[in-house]
Length: 154
Image (cartoon, rainbow, N blue to C red; front, top):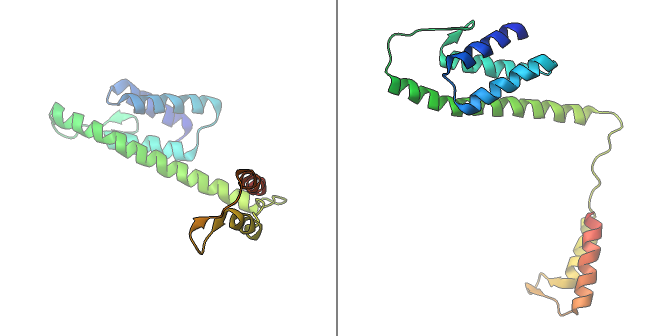
């Protein structure tokens, strides 16, 4: 289905009044994304999963026998959790793709490493691991040591 078809499906779902406020806001955001050309395939998958969950096919509501208002309300309440799961899965996939792109990017340097040995030397000035106690040093010396440790971490 094209963005136009998805847009029609979104409008049908919004018109149906079957959605909670969060889902309605998400769908309105998707409409804006479609207009701006920022609509992603993950968003499209979410819209179609929601439409299927609510009983829509090709923009038309599917009637599946008679159901009470209580069961319909319960189903709609459960949709919010399903919606959130679909959004989370889509976002996770998007972030994984971004990570792969960053890994493969030429010229990107890895984050600088911290010199653990240098930090350990400074830490040993204020803490004795063997006795599990602080060393007896002046406040000024401790403050200077902590300052050096902080600088090494930056």
